Length: 345
Image (cartoon, rainbow, N blue to C red; front, top):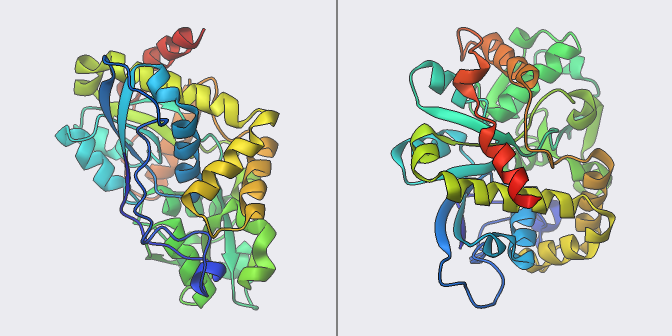
């Protein structure tokens, strides 16, 4: 089963039949193909981000039956607020997050939370910075302006800070506003409520339709290749008590990444998105699939290096959500990723 807590939009959806809207979709998914479950299927509760890419990837996973292939019966929750995922994992209501931002768990670990990043998911940011304001053309133009993000220190805010700093923008002169997830932020951009904000990367090809413009150097996939966008993470308690279930889940997702990034996956990807969003135009799914092929956004190898984690921790220190860089062994356990890869063969 898949559940979502997000609401959505798009010009086709803002004006009628949108492509990014999740409100009112009451679809039940992630339990696998319509086929007989093996008697030994083991339950696992997964929390993922609530973006369009995450929904589509989950539907491909469901239609291909990869979780069932590894003896699992998943329940997948889509949650836009990373802090709520942290709370659910710490509380034991969620076993693992397979695809969500994880910068917020480093400060939590610093404060004593028993959490670990166990793999990489989306290795490149799936965001680009858009505006509907004619006077805003470059990142430098955002000084003195309002930028929509998530909560301070969370994924979208951290991404914006990293991008602005790279291009010598005085971050202290930018007013960040917590709008919520990227869908809500993009809606605020199109409405002119904020001067700029991040939106789905595939919207680069739909700027005219939405009456927005990509800022110069606003493509985060190209500008921030060192930023690990989404990871797989869980609690040390879950690692100890549900290791086999989590490793099997990781193997299923690694198989998903390999398939979606292969040239023969376009039909399945488009079909998955069409299943979720019947009124969405097919060209949006095709565009998104082409971006995945171009950037190879998902981590088929699962393992994430210490250098990538240190980069993210230093960004946390910049935004004052973390005091110091924590040792790799304290924040990560890549042994599960290696077991999952061995299970794949």
